[in-house]
Amino acid sequence: MSKMGLAVIGAGAIGRKHIAVIRNNPQVELVALADPSPQAQALAQSLGVPWYDSVETMLETARPQGVINATPNKLHVPCALACIERGIPVLVEKPVADSPEGARALVDAAARHQVPVLVGHHRRHNALIAAARALIDSGQLGRIVSVSAHWILQKPDDYFDVAWRREPGAGPLLVNLVHDIDLMRYLFGEIEQVQAFTSHAVRQFANEDSAVVNLRFSSGALGSAVLTDCGVGPWSWEMNSGENAIYAHTPENCYLISGTLGALAIPQMQWWRYGEERGWLHPLQSDRLSVEPIDPFELQLRHFIRVIAGEEQPLIDAADALRSLEVIAAIQQAAGETA
View 1 (cartoon, rainbow, N blue to C red):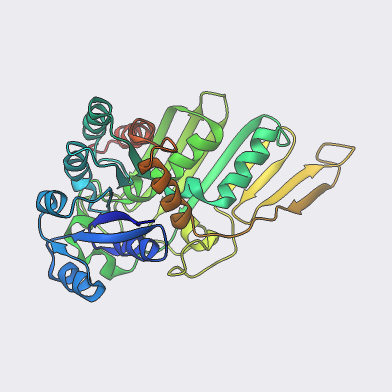
View 2 (cartoon, rainbow, N blue to C red):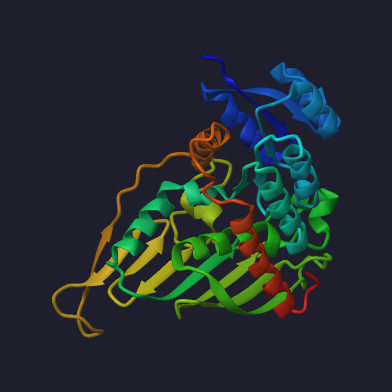
């Protein structure tokens, strides 16, 4: 049985991660890499795959069966549209676009051409999140009352040597919090109201380096998120989940969930609840849910293969991802930023 041919657009850190996962999967092969940089050309040569400095030329020449779009945010939509117009299923890295308007154009094009678009909110594929959702859906936490999310870490100074990372729209709201918004929507339902403050007092870039956000869910649950990319802290999905070995693993929690019957701390998966007697005068019981670790990028790729083959619908399509982007835009507006 011949392997499915996939192409990758963008050879930055996330593009290289996708390439490594593709090369580790026996069902697929990397047939092309599109990225105009000399570093990408050298990478393609080292891998023995064709390199292209033009997305359109690559699509017309290599004719991949599927494409992973791992470009900077502002290129997500034009590169994805080029795939859709040629009938090629595409996995678009998050955020699906750099604005809700761009995402809506992508949603419309996908529907018009009947081409599947999978958005790379890979954490939905993580076994930790699957276990959390199963516990919530089982009713054992009761009605969800509140959730607090933390994303507090310090990006190194050389991270910002890439110019677009200092520009509006490249701060932690759109680059990082969009992951947390997607997960909170996935676990707790839609968000109907936001309040927010942002600051760029430390780095003084054109985008924010810190934010505090309050959320109201349609269910009546309340949430909060505290995030910064310039402060020291052990609380972030990257450092706590252990899903990517490039980050130093710190066994803390970045999501604290409270329901009327129990509580859950993610990703250490500590489940708290009362015994026969409830209330603050009585001790809480706790267990740690057992979850087998597996790289969510691998699970995402397996899912994308089935999407390309027509065996499954995207777990998160462009319309779903648009709703997370609209929440981010509302947060930017509430904080007085330009969306």
